[in-house]
Length: 514
Figure 1 (cartoon, rainbow, N blue to C red):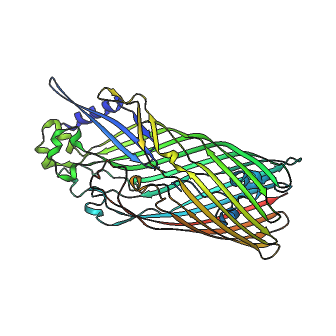
Figure 2 (cartoon, one colour):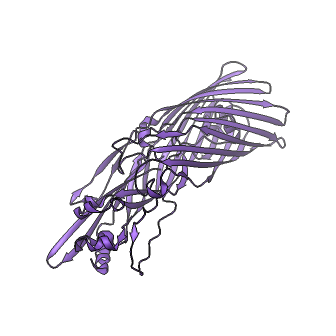
Figure 3 (cartoon, helix red, strand yellow):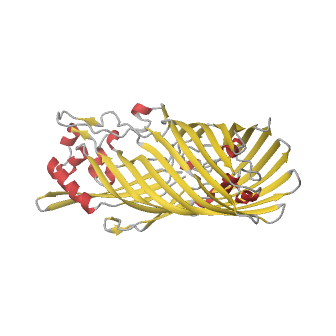
């Protein structure tokens, strides 16, 4: 096929079919499914040959992709304290605790999470662990993610407190170089041909959600407090992944091609935004002089993502093979990069969460424990709706993707001790299950297994109004071995292999009381 004719037909087609669709296939993540219709035309005399290609890619978008919370003191206790938190963090941990004492409070926190994943692939797919990558350990780029938090609580008298807080309930990030062209993918004597550059970070996820809550708390009696907080959730996601298309599905001439040309790589990149709503309901009760109990229910609405998608198909180039193909099929060896851009729209459900906790405080000693149930099974499937998407004249209006997330449990324990009126220290531990089953595991979601978290921190009172908290966290996670089933293919929802994860975090808070 003449190169000019080929490219002219391609760009005409690009204008006709400039539409993609996405459905969140989050296991955090697979989080998004994309359909891409690409129509190529080649006209020779009165004959018209039409080729329609349907490409499905899955990507992920970070238990699951939920973050630990906000506030250095609370994180140093492993998230175990829902009965005696700082007032400014109460809209997240337990809004009832804004009413625990008179006065006003402003707080600022910054948590930094360093995350790095390791993956030994076992897909059997050329370009992944075939050829270059056979049994190599691929290491993700180390990501340092700053997570800010800000809150203010105002005493309105008569036992009523009003607060505002900004925090990040969900987040995820990671970049991987998982794909390379198989040996011989580009094999040509054409001196004018320039081999296209393939993106280095060809697998990546960057999910951020920000919550802005207003909160109210009321002291019903000396022993009982109630509170509620809620407000908008604003989410953004940037996702990238390499998927494949078998050229034989749209051109029978490809059935005779060598194995390295039977799976053509397609890069997918998503940039979308969403708005939702969240709310927390909290109760706190003083059982005895030293013992307190608390209960918190967290609700998050679905996030409705809308945005842009870009897909690029990388065709191979081999002069010898091209000579033996029919003229109408020589485009298969043209070496072109074929792109398509479009828009996407899809909602996905966030989990509900219920936490119960106890706290013992006597003089300068505090001991806290909590138990959290997270209903991740709400995320068992993603239903996406499409507009103006047609394949061979047949409209695609909806698609449902199974995720099979499991409900999880988290147990946390924390201890704090005041050495002097101005210096105190904390230690925390938690056991947190992963909701991600093997059948939807990919490198894009770092929650590979049950997590054991260990926290340490100190607090220093600068003066009567200012206190500073500084701490760190280490997360231990066992490696995950995902077996490759006999029916595994490039269309499967998971990627088999061995997964490892390394997580270190630091936290800092400054609290001003007035």
